[in-house]
Length: 70
Image (cartoon, rainbow, N blue to C red):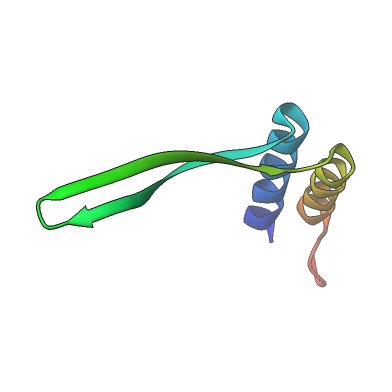
């Protein structure tokens, strides 16, 4: 549970700081035997500040939650 809380806090903080997550991937345009043409494409997954804040809050709740019997 604590590991998931830490991951959620990290993702939420990145979303709040950068406004989203960016990643790169290669797209093959031409593949004719020994001739290859690729294009590197950057895509952004936008995360609104509300979603980022809720994700951080959910992570904090998971970190602070105690199991029964503790």
